[in-house]
Image (tube, rainbow over all chains, first blue to last red; front, side, top):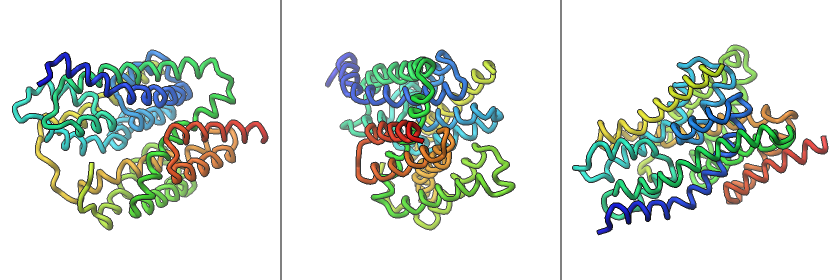
Length: 236
Length: 101
């Protein structure tokens, strides 16, 4: 049995590659924040408190168009909805008698990557192992965002604009491999691209805000997909 | 504007935290419903797809550079190129196309 200190150290070690990736992703997130008029300190705290790439980007895109608070909250909810599933799954990984405070701290930084680390541990999740991973990845995520905003402010416009698509490139790298593997996902993704484009040109619908359209399309398309192509075994 | 961003930031954090912590602390049972499980499985792919297109072509000053980066990104990701490389090449595509347009 490892003690708390050893567990914490191992969490840091396992978290290092994730932290490096976070640094790169959050840097591009910072570029997007800068374009939306968010300053470095705000960006730092937004990343420190949210710990979500798609979720933060969704919020930023709403802030950029001065959306209402309700729209921002709904958009954040949709973009982060998958964490509900992960949180339910991770709940099973805790010792049934684990103190609630540990569940509350781990939940604060439940990300796709740390979820992956936690699930791969043998036996029950040791909170201090998770805290080690949090201790190395969270600062990288927040500082990377802040640097993205600061560097974005001094780079020439042409480069900032090129860097602005970096996040989209990452999103594609998440969606496309799954679409290649799972035919229903491919179909849903194609429908999403097409309908998302149509929604920007169809009179009436195009008058809705970008965020509202994203929320509506996500609910409609994901419901249709779940109805027509239910997943027999959802692997996490 | 500043107050608006801070409030938005705090609201986003609250929503994110509730999503992550409520199942861990309050409803500890596994989701059994097949529809809800499937729905939550599809949600991220749909949201990311909707947020990517057509937004990517409106981010760049010309539609063409964004569109080109979008297509290149899809091809690279399909071929299994890593996330980091896909992302960097998309940026390069935009930069180069804008240089020549």
